[in-house]
Image (cartoon, rainbow, N blue to C red; front, side, top):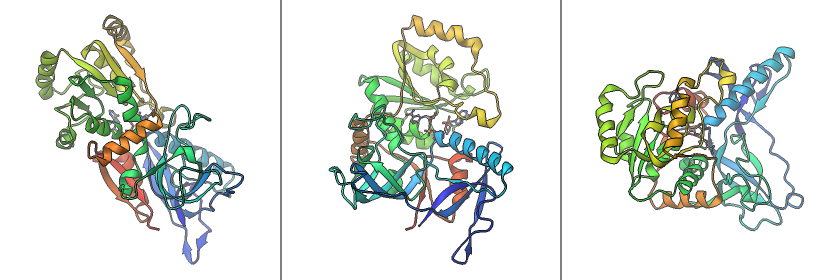
Length: 385
Ligand SMILES: NC(=O)c1ccc[n+]([C@@H]2O[C@H](COP(=O)([O-])OP(=O)(O)OC[C@H]3O[C@@H](n4cnc5c(N)ncnc54)[C@H](OP(=O)(O)O)[C@@H]3O)[C@@H](O)[C@H]2O)c1
């Protein structure tokens, strides 16, 4: 059974499977050329006695996230450096940080899962679900077909849960429900969600549709779909421009400020893009929560990005005078993933899927995930066997 892998440029030049030559494809990523292929990879060893609490699983579908971009850039740069030293060497790596899988075998002490169960990652953070070990995402190699993972880092999903949604559910689901738990919003809260088209924000907007939730985005593309998910309005922020919003959106934005007095909470997955501009519009005692920042891969991108430091005194002034609470956030607990799964099943929240690709579409999968301006929702890679 083949896995989608990143590989070094020379991988497979002399290899065949049966009489089929290994095909290596490539896609551009931030001025780098990244190579990928479908490759036969041996499953990891599994000993149900020695790994009594572990589970042997087979991946059915997976997806890549914003965080995986820096992993891809780092890995392919290092692989290229290595083959520059040794042209015979070949490297490969699985990629991706969430998946849906089928349980094949369980360790002797496993009580929560049985063979045949469908599972996704439980990325409980900072501790694993049982509290016995560090938690978080248990793999950055989700694309590999077989994994051995601790039972408390997996969560069973119903058999009828759509595979495409399950393959991209853990990170958005656990993080958004974790953030909402931190915020404890009042029913009449006025909320702004930034980078509306990021998967995290699409999921947050959908989960908040009963509230007055507004969206900020770098473009009006898919505005209708964002409004359909639950946003009352979408405003386009002019990144890199001294104007805050595009002119046609400004009156509607100002009207909301006038009617409400500002935002009770801001949910922002890219704090370095927005914090300095948005604190002006947060109410007294308001909340600002962020789970991420834009400049995660700048070291590999060779671009410089400058936090607008000239505005820093203004930012601190707002923060202090308005007693704004700023929260850093990461993932969530098992209960948050359970709540997200239940909400999806009850139809209370939606995880938009852009495209599901298969083994003939390796390059399109990566291009759509990372290079397309026309992406709305999650991009999934689904295995055929
Ligand atoms: N710590 C955690 O537990 C955790 C969990 C989930 C996510 N995160 C973080 O949340 C963030 C979003 O992750 P994701 O996977 O949801 O991202 P994603 O789907 O890849 O987000 C893409 C979106 O980001 C915005 N964007 C991208 N480049 C931009 C630029 N140059 N200028 C302005 N906006 C730009 C665009 O939204 P618009 O066009 O709508 O502006 C774009 O559609 C990341 O920082 C990630 O690390 C962290």
